[in-house]
Amino acid sequence: MEYLDKVSNVLKRLTSAAVSILALAVVLQVLFGPNVAFFPVDVVGNVIGITKQLGSEGLVGLVAVWVLLSIFNKENS
Image (tube, rainbow, N blue to C red):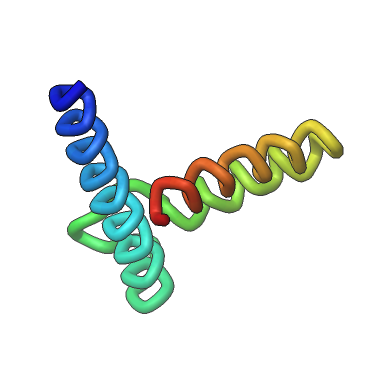
């Protein structure tokens, strides 16, 4: 059981770091435009694309967003 707790803590920390990096990438891309040297991927465009996909799915998209938010909020508690 202790092993699972350690793995869970590592995954929580990695997820938190990934969300922080994503937020940094969005801020840098808003400030400097799409050609940020550190992030060669269009992060804002990808976030907009995911949002459009979920929005076009109607109720299924809303349920998916709700599930993702509950998982994220549970991990941050």
